Length: 331
Ligand code: KG4
Ligand code: ZN
Image 1 (cartoon, rainbow, N blue to C red):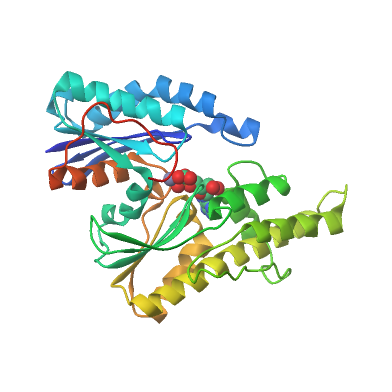
Image 2: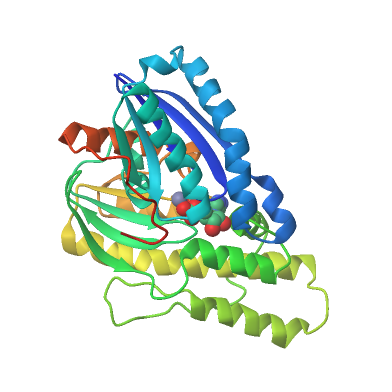
């Protein structure tokens, strides 16, 4: 049984193959050029997906030692994401499905992230608590099975990754902000500035826009028109990162206590953050819970998670016709 996965929702083109339940390829091509514009330019992203998708599929098949005709099911991200970018991967997958006469499975990108812990040797156990932190979404979920997900909380404004990206921009660190902030933060003092952590009505909801504004005010007050000395910059990054992690930990801890899940998982692009990985691992230890945090290659956008999620949908017997359209928002 050979499953082909295709991901093209934002600025990563990725193709993966799962062969008899074993991941044999997970190729990721990142569109680095967006950094010249300070963020992802949708039209350029679509064009870049279009250029790379065929060679990437060829490489993934070669790496897996199979031919196109040996593919049994084709899965592709249908949303949420940039509509033009999604169209490239989804239409390509539908075309393949038509020509090979093999089923096509549309996959929700967030669900891909949610179940990405299953790509690890040590797998989550149901019911598990999932903290999903990406560039576009911040969610706390109770995942009961491959078909039942209960949403406990979400962000009321910016996503965690978005906050990293915006604050990095304010600090002149460039795009994508997460890794840049992490690097600066590792050289800084997290106790230097006491940035606020929002408390909200929704018990498990998050908010990061107040924190972002507070960093902006701090910069305006202290460095109006002046360069930020390197050590100050590192301290600001470190204090900001600490506040984001604190906000994420507070709600996760509440949910851990209340729902007593078997496993805690941390997934999505921001799950690549080392300090967050460490803090969440410590939290799980305190509550004697199993923790699954995917390897780096499965944190950011990747097709392995799309192939895995697609396979699980395929196994339920659900089938989709080729009129299936991409969707930009959460479904
Ligand atoms: O899941 P993802 O690759 O794309 C979306 O589905 O949005 O997440 C991308 C986000 C970006 O906001 C990026 O800055 C953030 O993940 N990110 C990080 C780190 N690496 C990537 N945030 C904090 N620390 C990191 N090391
Ligand atoms: Zn993502």
